[in-house]
Image 1: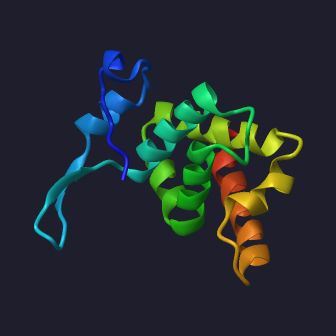
Image 2: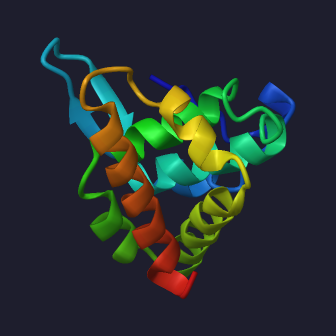
Image 3: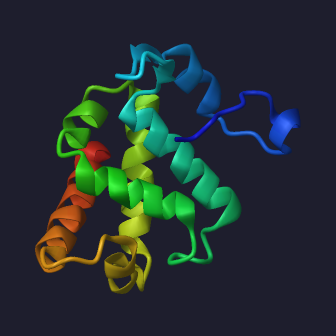
Length: 141
């Protein structure tokens, strides 16, 4: 679970996607009866890319933000379609960020360390890379 503050003064930094994420969040009730506001997956990924750029882009393996991004790409097959239906600005942002990630010289070497270590790892690595390439291609990337 991530808690999000939209005012930059609370955390000492701002994330350009927080206001839209909060404004468009859907109310959901958990099995326990607790009500939460759930942001759309593309916006969650956008907030994580923004945070990654601000606080972890130099450390691919140590970045919890990048780990979150990869876990969503890995665990949410419908993410491509959700991003394809997103507004132009969000779609272009995510496409560009995925393109930049794939262009990092050592990214594919680090990818296994960002995924759950299990027998399916080689196949999941290929699938995650393919999903990132599909997202990057949304705006001609």
